[in-house]
Structure formats: structure tokens, C-alpha cells
Length: 303
Image 1 (cartoon, rainbow, N blue to C red):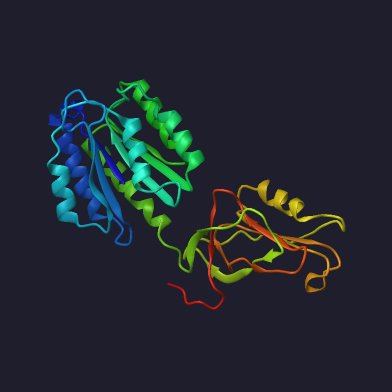
Image 2: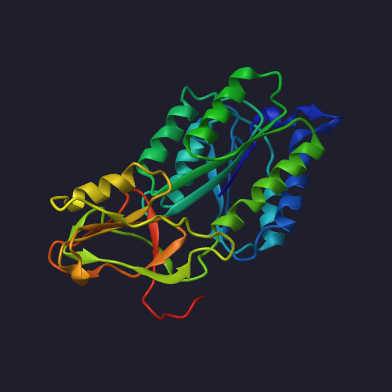
């Protein structure tokens, strides 16, 4: 979801031109390189009322890009009012069903929050509650506004997003083109689909299918760990939790595949795994909380 600042300050001038005019052109440039397989929606704030903190509107629901109508909606914006950054990003996250699926917001703002809210605190909240929420933020013409920059940088960093400064038309073009390339890295996987797996499931197993979630990235190779005879599945889960790159794990108990000692297997999110299935008694598997792992039926065709 692209969230555009259409508050009254967007009539301010940079290089002799109104910032809203520069923003319109920058969006057009971004759309020209927008990935064909990536949906996009449009929101704006401050464009209908001079003093309202609820002046936020969804102009385009997320959908495959229709460039002409999308640009027409951007060109029609007439800056008027306040800067409700926090409420706008929250609404964008909710529109994207951030608590159920991966959600990405691209925010362009030329100022600080003016509606008695905290964008930084919101970023931390959305990161905590979302499945995989990210806010990429472009600060336009805010070099003389340290408070705005601090707020916007924190919103991005709290969600694992990128923050970019843009001082003029050329830099805004570059910034929006840069963030336009980010969603392509989050495109649908080469095989299977993202699903949220169980955090801890006893007597269940999973295994790599040989497919990858990405055509370019390679999975990290975790060495299998032979564990103490009295080790249990929670010890294997702990090994995964202690490594930031580990997203899924499986514990094989003694007797499973003729094991004489328990084994712990771990994978990162690039490895496509089989769906959880009935395993040897004592086996267990799990996917880190808040992580979506790739799973696909063994032998299923890649898409």
C-alpha cells in the first residue's frame, strides 16, 4: 500500500516547484518499474479537509497495477490539511490484513505527525502483532525538521523497513524507484506458498522437498545436531530459537529411522518443507512464532 502525504505543507516549494507536483511525477516514475506480479494499493491523508485528523482515504484497494487509473488518482490529490501519519499507517496495515498475512506499506511524508500520536510506537506495535509487517518510509524535504526525521526513521526501523531521505525532485524519484524494487524480493515463492506452521507439534515431522522459496537465494545449511540421549524436542526448538536465521526445526527421537541418539534438524525460510505429517512417536517439529515457512507437497510442480 502506497500512503501519500497530501497535507497542506505539500504545497511548499522545492526548486521552485510545489512538492505535490514533484510527488506526482515521482509516483509515475515508480509505477513505470513496478513489478508486474506485485499488487499495489493507494491511500492519502490531508487532501479533503483543512483541520481533520480523520481525513484519510483508501483511493485504490490493493490489486494488480492499472497504471493510468492509479496515476489519475494521484494527480487528483489537492493538499489541504493535517498529517495523521500514525492513523494512516494503521489503517493501511488493517486494509492489508497485516495480522493474517505479509503486509508492506510505502509511506511518503514531508513532515511530522500532527495528530497527537506516535508513529514510532505504532511501528513497534505492528511489528509485534503482524505476521510480517514492513513499512518503508521516504522523508521528503525534511532535512530541517529533525523531529519528523526521527519519527519516520523509527517507524521504518521498528518494522524492519528502509528509510530514505529525498531533498529534491531527483532524490524523490530515486527513493521511490528504490522502494519499488523491494516488493519484488517478496514476490510469490518459486515453489509452494507461505503458510503459518505450528510453533510446536509433537509426534509430527517435516522434511525439505528440495525446492526453494526463492529463485536467487540459497538456503543456509544447518548441520544436523546429534543430541544427548535424554534430550527432548524442546532442546531442539531452543537451538532454532537461538539462531536468527533458523525458521523451522524437527526433532527425531531415538528409534526414528533407526536413530540411536536424538537428532535436531533446522532450516531457514528459503528451504521449502513438506507439510507437517504424522511422525514417529516422540518426534516433533515447529515453525518460529510469527514466521511463515514455505511448505509444498512432495513432488508438486513449481509455479
